[in-house]
Length: 119
Image (tube, rainbow, N blue to C red; front, side):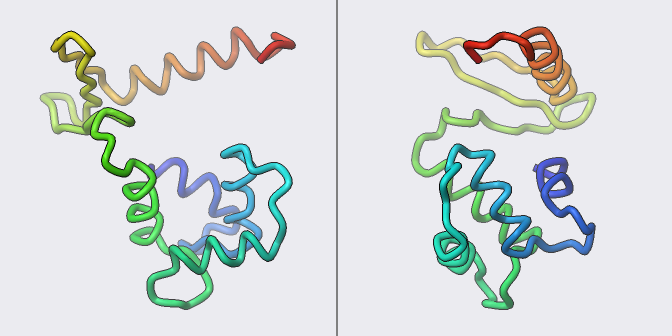
């Protein structure tokens, strides 16, 4: 989440304004979102009503996106080598991956499939 926040905080001021927040919404698939819709959604997550999304508000927003589905994003645990992602399978198995492994695998897939017209 830290990398995501830093990515969208283009001017690196520690907050996301409406234009920065709109980029999140577009990347989440809301390609035709209007400025008024962005303003409303930002306002819904702007707990202190200062017109921007702070780091703590961003974390709360992401937690709310997870909702009640405990397996949607998995669980982040502290392992021997730092933060680890832990996912439970449908048949009771548990798999643990370092966040670096997850990030590297995602970059590899994105690189290998970047020219696939179906994706």
